Length: 433
Image 1 (spheres, rainbow, N blue to C red):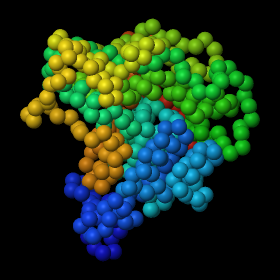
Image 2: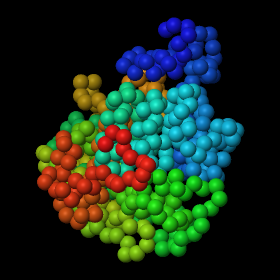
Image 3: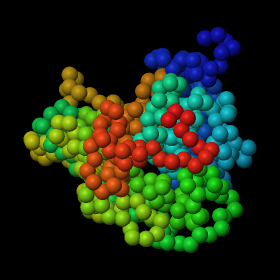
């Protein structure tokens, strides 16, 4: 590398390399616990309320990362993020586009409400940034498709925040299933919470209120339809409003169906049909996402993934049923029937799945350096989100739908296909649609 070539220029030009791009500090005679600033990956955090603040703290604790900018439309969140990152007000932004113009930013963390994920992530990769994007990857199937195309076109690294992909327990459970320890897989039961976990004393029937000072509500709405402001609509509770998200279907479903498809060996594909039953919605108010449901996904070989809302916490997680046993998993907790399956060793010549060493954020940083694919890359994250979205579409239409996982279209169903993309309010649009 020429002496005048910066590290960031080298990163931008080296996306096809599969060798480490950073020289270990110990070789250069420096303290390996304190990498030089030029060796750190510079990050901007976009959306730092709730999950975003947790991601910020995790990256801030990584010695190989340096947070240089924070962006949020809520001044309270922005101030908190700047404090946590040890930055002054000059490093704070209200408009993500200003962040993406900075040449000193290597990567961005996106943890906005779901309806902003894909638009910001696409803009980031087009600006030459790598992306850590919270789940679900996108708010519609078309947005996920566009983001996949953008990441591939620009050769960027994207890690989705489906962190169970990096957990040893989930990996081991899927390896047991993939290597035939439970025999032929018949179905996987996926349990998520029922009833909305509304934060704050909100019913969803609150009247409109003036927008509070310090909150850019128009930008928060972004591509979505104009709607009167109420605090019941915003921040965490957006996920119960179908304009922004279909409730637990994409909230927990993005995590759990991701692992279900991993275990089924379908994480780069999808089912051939989806059938939503026992779907219930609230009768009034803005919280109109499905609150209870049973969604059955059927694959080409007849295996099923069944997503069920339940108040029984013991049923939350994934349970793989085979003709020779079962494997249940949630995070690091793996239970098998018979118990002897749990003590099985996965051989060197058997299927071994991606091992991210229980460090999802660290895996992203490693891949930014090496240009190798992370544990939850854009292609798989899109499939994990889209299986949730076709389930939500089946709930909305109230009937069984045929799905073509190759074409990513509903078979002979114009009404369902119109829901693959969602309308966007000007000036926002999918550049790659």
